[in-house]
Image (cartoon, rainbow, N blue to C red):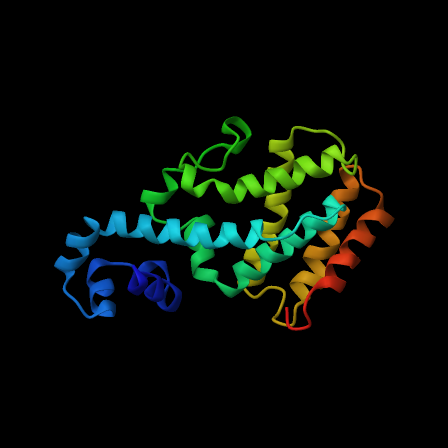
Length: 212
């Protein structure tokens, strides 16, 4: 599986084939089938590993007494992971992900999760928990938390994909000029006070390491 992840990061989704993985690992294609039962199961194993790492990044953000700041900190962690691991991110959420993975995707507004696979669902659970905390604190209006989570995810995901494609340059403009102001506008539209939302964002930016 390590060889598959390495191949994914270096050459992208299209490079994930039994022959390429075997060559990367210095073994035969038969070994891929012996150990994983085929490429579908290998890709599935890689996806689980990627989701576990992604979920850890989101859930390791500590809770404070400011749920909006915590949500913004989680969004920053999301953004950082996606930009540092573009191929892994595309495997999880891209439109070109293998059919073996896209078949697990679900209508989160109906099911309460973005996937029918429990081991892939925890990352959305972290987002949903962040929304629940903001609603409970009265920072945003009490709309359907699943729909709110989906809206906020859409904001982050869209900005991330455009930044990956190079439309916002490579000097951090995607975060400082696009995503940061956009998420503040969105939270204000959902009921937060602009001054409070701006203060929450400022506290998150101040708390980030200098090399983040």
